[in-house]
Length: 112
Image 1 (cartoon, rainbow, N blue to C red):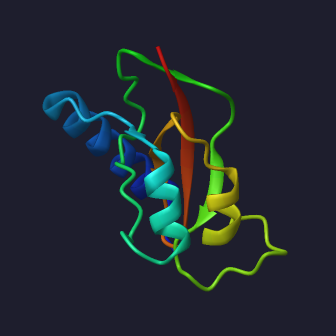
Image 2 (spheres, one colour):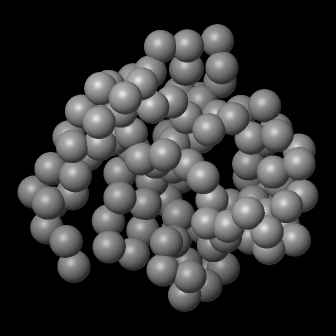
């Protein structure tokens, strides 16, 4: 299990990289959802930006906890891949804001 200090350090590193390289959330299109549901174009392309707040993107609410191990069950707190795919919206943008050993937090953004 990762310590809180390690997770926070990773967030800061991601923020610095996203700032330096102008990494922005990935905008989902209908074709993406169709491919992901068919098991293609995996892993999901959401960048890890940590606490970076990119211009032109507005967070829509709380980030979602998602299972990154592939072993999560639908009755657990972290969303499985199928549950996540059901929540993703076309024309919305997404980025990872916190990453741990077995879960991550995915933030949804509206494009300004």
